Image 1 (tube, rainbow, N blue to C red):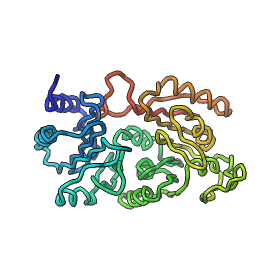
Image 2 (cartoon, rainbow, N blue to C red):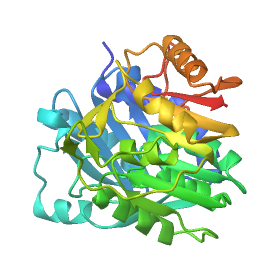
Image 3 (tube, one colour):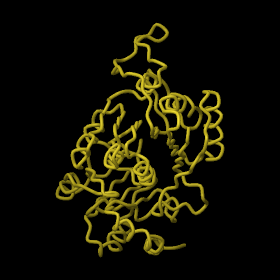
Amino acid sequence: MSTLTELLQTADSHRAALLPRLAAENTTAYRLFHGSAEGRPGLTIDRYGDVLLLQTFHTPLSDDEYAAIVAHYAPLDLLPVYNDRSGANSRIGNRLPPEQLEQAQLPRTVSELGVNYHFQARHQGQDPWLFLDLRAGRRRVMQLAAGKSVLNLFAYTGGVGVAAAKAGASFVMNVDFAESSLQVARANAKLNALATRPRCVQSDCFAALRQLAGIGQPKVVRGKKMPPFPVLEARQFDVVFLDPPRYAKSPFGVVDLINDYPALFKPALLATAPGGVLICCNNVAQVDREAWLAQLKRSAEKAGRPVRDAEWITPEDDFPSFDGQPPLKMVLLHV
């Protein structure tokens, strides 16, 4: 069995061509070690600017493993921050020494494809503010966005929306339920010189989508009053980016990427302008991508908006998948 240091060395060799390209594109955030594919499931090591972010999701690192990782990446001169998320609900469970915690909580800026984003290694939430495996999706949106209207659903900290605006989108709407995430999205927008400032809408995505799609969202459903939601006019977008969580339940509906992706897909499709593109994401590893795409095509046919063409967007080389089946599936649908 390979030692951890040997696994890190192999990972470095796999990225030998990628990292200079990313540096040339003004990208300072990328994955250095993707444990699920590179021999240590549950361990991820990311670079975010001057921070080396270590995260564990199955079992904590031993002291020796932590020391080996820090020693291996010492030539990069980065601040190591370890977030152990192997406990319940992937919450960060380990305490840091006071000085290290203070450094981990410092606001920083990272860049990706020339777009600037806020980053903190430790903050009130659990996940980093920029999901690095979505870089390929943000790159594709930037290639499409000039002069187009863009809808970013489950926007989190607005990465896709800010990237679209940076690339010259005429109008951008970020929709997310969490105001704390949208605060970061607004701050991300301010970091960049943008001709159009994205609109951030705090809303359950079901409620927003149904209104944008022209289906409508009743204020009372089966005699039950719905929670407050912003009123939106029906409109269609040239580019729609749909990146839902694996599972979430609210009074407005259930997000279930395994059993009921079409519940979100149909209104997202109806909110996409004819001739536009709908980019769908599914981050559940056990979902077969061809079966999922076939399901999307059937749903589109039923909705009267058949898919004209489909294009897979594959995560970049810092997220290797040696079986050709990356856990994160992104498909661009021409509709």
